[in-house]
Image: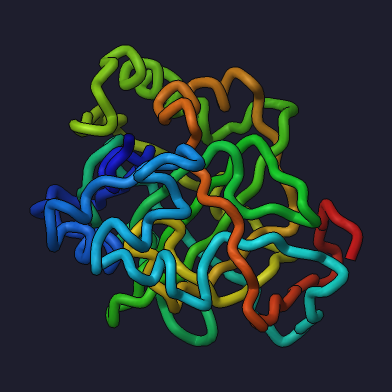
Length: 277
């Protein structure tokens, strides 16, 4: 069993502002106690196929037509050279694992709208698949605009060399795992101190864009997804530190039907893509 507060979340805060909800997903999930519990085990009462039945607030999980994640079929993606380059700037900031302390750390501009960086979440295995292939880890960089709309940059990982960003979190991830709390019934907090985010703002290059939803209840739609076309490397040890904190069933929602949606592909000159298109 897992609740919306049990996801592995790393939030950055530029100041010690009072804790507030980070997105419409958190706001809606907090409306009722019944809406707080869901799971990822296929076939279970709380599993993804039953999310839409767990609460009226979750109805889009079962009835929505623009849901995430999806399987991205590269040869069916529509090239669009007019998309933006997802330029983003992130400052170093204090961070906390498994808590909600927002602050303006950086921004990204999508379709001319500015979104402020709010949180990082991990999903193992990956939620999005590329040509049917699932990867061991997916990172979501969630940004929110002033009007509450969301834009997410998704980074897929394959096993290989260690990733520099996770060196900063190694000790604290191990500390959180040692806490051995019941992630379905309680939350935990570990301050990680100053975290440098430069490695997460590398030149984006190619990416796939589509409009979908949050990948956990209440499955709010209208989220602008940007799935990077370059697969980053991460060591098995680093993935192990993250997967030690999630339920045995993982925390990846199954892929959802496209229902006629288009997936656009941006591939600027001299960019690297890990797939055939």
